[in-house]
Length: 119
Image (tube, rainbow, N blue to C red):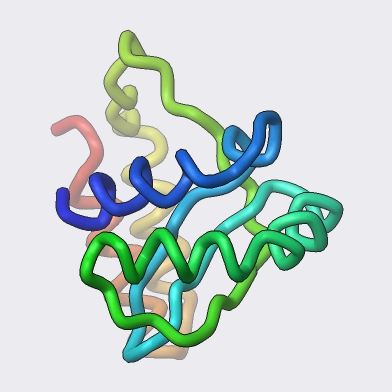
């Protein structure tokens, strides 16, 4: 929640539409890590690095640098339907695949998925 509050505060120092294409992803050591949804927004964000660092200092964050990563950020609708559980047929298919796999890690993951299916 603190990261979200800092994100809102820092993005206020950015012009629109840049602010709506940018999110604070992390605060690592003395570096603010921002996520953008396209490379062009990353380039524009770097032009505002001084303003962001100034806003961070005003918020009591002693950051000395920013990092920008391109990441697809798709909003999750608030009324998103819960995931549909796997069917019994899917469970049996996963179990059969697990039985045919030699890799123990993959086998255990497939069996874990199979256990999540309807009984």
